[in-house]
Length: 172
Image 1 (spheres, rainbow, N blue to C red):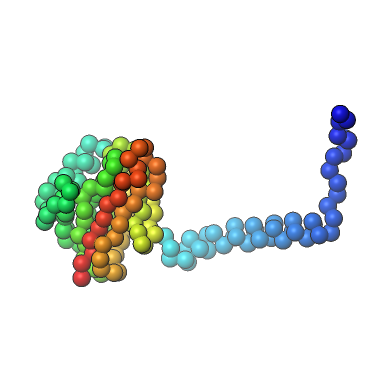
Image 2 (spheres, one colour; image 1 turned 135 degrees about the vertical axis):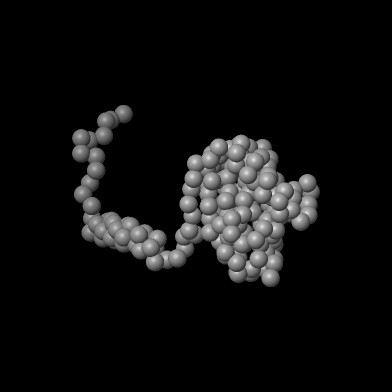
């Protein structure tokens, strides 16, 4: 076998130079657009994150669920709280509790994980967050349609990940 020559590349031809220039210009345009999409696109849900103790947060959510409980489904409380702060957490392999919200009202949804990283995805609204243990994510939401909204874990959280589905109920 022969070794490759010392200069193994060849100079770019006219067409290759054109395509490299077009690709570079497109990358620069998209890079410049990112701050504009972030600022003016109105696609980002307002949220804040706080560090919390997992045990204290679990107690806070359990007390919240007990105070506003209106029913139960498969052992998970159904909670109807007034507009404002509402609380829930994810743990293997469930979302707790089931929240009942009013259409058109603004809520500050506090959500955390008690064990591992979970993905919080509201469907069909396509609202997605990474939920980490030890952090309280406060997401400001205003439901605009009534009905059931599915909560899906879209971050692999071990063997029961496929059954980690919860819900919120939005009433008129």
